[in-house]
Amino acid sequence: MFTGLVEHVATVRTLSEGNRARRISVDLGPLAEGAALGDSISVSGCCLTIAALSLNCADFDISAETLRKSTLGGFSVGTAVNLERAVTFGQRLGGHLVSGHVDGIGRLLERRREGDSERMTFLLPDDIAVVEKGSVTIDGISLTTWDCRGARCSVAVIPHTLTHTTLGDLRPGTAVNLEQDLIGRWVERLLRDRQPSGPVLPA
Image 1 (cartoon, rainbow, N blue to C red):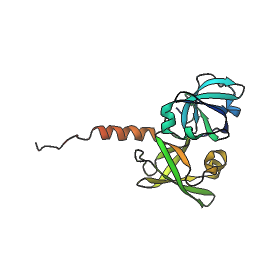
Image 2: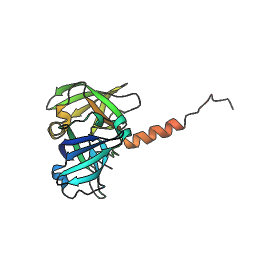
Image 3: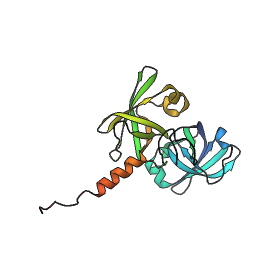
Image 4: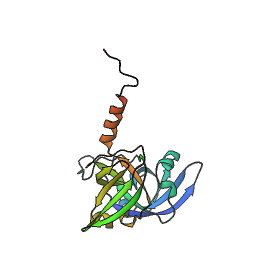
């Protein structure tokens, strides 16, 4: 489990292709201290498991399903990624509950400066729903949604987030990993499952 508060921006050092899978190596930087095999790390919003460690670099195996659902299949050597370690009990939850299980890929439509911050508007895939003033995770970053209209929603990005994550480098058309709010996802699923499957007959 994560909070969506990015701890470090790193780069992909190496990558290799396997049988319908991929392995990447990422320089963990300051997050390497205390890291161990089997630890979960959010890599641009995807929960990945450390498969190997060498000095500050960690190797992650990416499954075929993760490649289908996220932008990780488009990574190359030098790609910048947002990193966050899993939360521990007793830790402050500064963002929102994030599982690291990407729901789909969205795209940045436009970015516009508003004061010291920026408004970023994203196009969402059909199977992702967000609500006004709700939470969404974009490339592993916890953000608050607003101006939600159909398949579009906006977020306000403060200067700290622009300079301490990969959002500052996004350009219109760039693909991003999206994860719906964890609680909202289950509420939506429960309500959908309770809908009658056929016509309602009079009593």
